[in-house]
Amino acid sequence: MRSSYSSRNHTRNPVPVILCAAVLLCAARVRAAEVDPFMGDWRGSGKASDGQAFEFVTQVIAQGNHQYQVNIVKAFDVRDKPMHVMEGSLQGSKYTYTADGGQYRGECTLDGDACKGWYKGDVDGDFDMTRVVRKSPTLGAKPPAGAVVLFDGTNFDKWVSFGTLRGVVNLIEAVGNAQDAVAYMRAKVWSPQARKATLQLGTDDGVKVWLNGRLIHGNNAARGVSPDEDKVEVSLKEGVNDLMLKVTNGGGDWGAIVRFMGEGGEPLQSLNEISPQFTGDRGSNEYLRQISGFLTQWQVAGPFQEAGKGPDALFDVAFGPEKDSGSDVKWKWINAYQPPDNRVKWALVAGAMEVRGGNIVTKDRFKDFNLHIEFRTPFMPEARGQGRGNSGVYLQGRYEIQVLDSYGLEGRDNECGGIYQVGAPMVNMCLPPLQWQTYDITFQAPRFDASGNKTEDAVVTVVHNGVTIHDRRRLPGPTGGAMDGNESEPGGIYLQDHGNPVRFRNIWLVETK
View 1 (cartoon, rainbow, N blue to C red):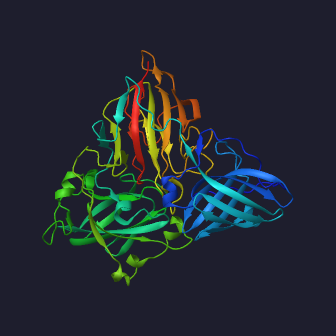
View 2 (view 1 turned 180 degrees about the vertical axis):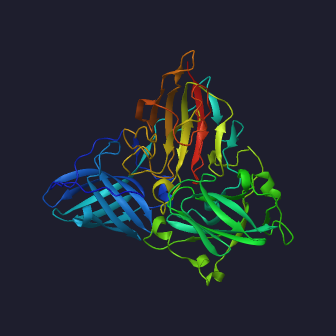
View 3 (view 1 turned 135 degrees about the horizontal axis):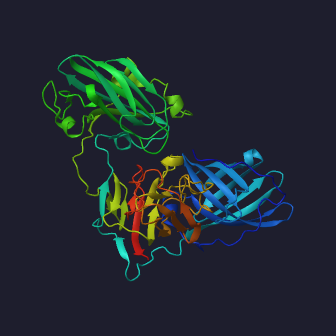
């Protein structure tokens, strides 16, 4: 979840004079402002009732449904908690808020790129703010002579798709990217005889399972899809068997993969799927034969939500599909079968590539290099945490630099610029969603002796929007989601699909020795 910072002790001067930001500031409209009138960076000044003048900068974070969190900070590019945090709503052009847990209250009236307001508390005062746009000094940087241009905005010739698990039901595509929600999946499987079987499944996140109307399994877990993570002994009847799953979602990816296994751990032979895809009362096993028995023909319904409840609580809330009166639930058929194909399925949009269906990696492999890449997180005000503009840039396909809309957050190792379980960025340089950002990365591959023993870890320096956030940080090994663990081998640049429409552009690399 997107965190709210705790308030700090206050002096009578509500905000101090600020330092200049480390990246370029300009008073100009940005596309993000056209999508949301208030979100983004502001600079202001004011005067308290005791005569003290002050200056400040703010980060305005859209929370959805006209709600905003406003962080008042010393400067944009420092690793300090906000001095004050406002929570409030924008109605028309007026933002009404409370700050620091109710110690202050006030209003700010929005007029284009300006906002004029007042506050009351132990000190009263007035203030004015003007929108500013931070821009990376390397945005749009041209590839130097000898650079390998990996993406120039016109095609995916340098890339292939990989890692798409065949048979996975992508619930984000099926029912939408809903956070704190559940979806239901149901399938009909025809068996020529009654038999014992093992139901194997993996889900993101928790799951309940019904077979022929009887609840047979429940696992209230937060996890990613991993085939065969849950194993349930079941009895199939002769003829049609009805299977239903309830899958919860906290944030990020959302999906499931399911199959029936027989003796010896092999997919059951002669099971058929029944759906509009296949004619006849008994259906077909055409797809099951091709993808190791994973079910592909599903009806889905959702998302279902209940105010104030997360996935753990929703696990035990019975929505329409679980009830006898669930006949009015709207189901839709989906086909999860995907033939083998390494073609990139991402979209080309205005000179950028947009994440859509599967991870991608460069065809070429590299050892030591300098990488320039530009990215833009989407505007997802209703989403929180890892479900908000999530992707990643993997160096050699093994070491991930996180991509996330973590604008205004603390800057942890699982947020933008972080290296998960290795190191947080020295400062959170994440810009607001819909603004283009840059990573300029210097990477030195690990070193090995003649016997194949690692003598030096990989080393990385990351400059995010013109500010160094990792300075020669050592990487002890591949991070989560790596393509492989073959650290002694060259590797490609891998961009992650995490279910959010993040965009990338202007990607080039200079190999070093």
